[in-house]
Length: 245
Image (cartoon, rainbow, N blue to C red; front, side, top):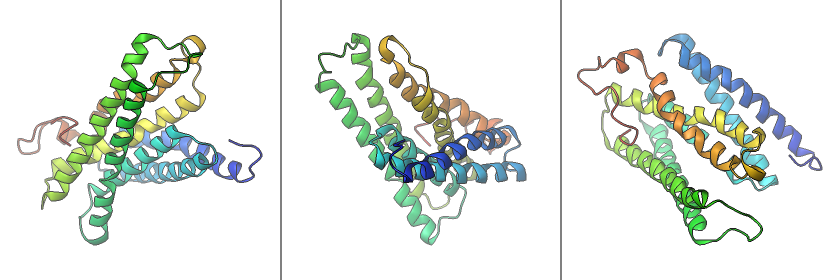
């Protein structure tokens, strides 16, 4: 936050407060019975809090250049929007909104590809000593991120082409997109406030940025209704894989 800018505190503190409270809403939505009134109320509260937090993050990222904040904001707005719309009728403006959201993971995948190429082709400054394993892992991790969001975009377009997607598919899609948004509750504060890792903090960004991606399968499983996890949906597979959703 830039203290010299009077606009920054007005954006920063709502972002922090809403980001913290969204943790509790997410925990409630995951813990209670899916589809219950309490689940819906907590889910709507989480979606609203995280959406406003994402918009405020975009606002102060223009004050100070912060690519991680733009990434987190994009993932939140996509995850919440696509997650909510997965359970809604696809008519009129809602269908147009779903189509617009389906381009967000494409943009994220392209940005991740650009980051992978930059890390692979542009050597680090001479004064910065980067371990060889990190030099190799960096581009590969960004390639994995690009593959994940490309798969999400592919799933979005397949979903939009279906005339009447079944209930299990809509609920799996809802669970996965909301899981993406929930991971930002972990990633954003770690990047901003996490303690330095490794010599001179060289491992901080790789661990804090990529680490939360490994939480997605767990949150995805916890966010699904019990009837879907138990395979009661007319022979539908319990977990068909993240890329297929």
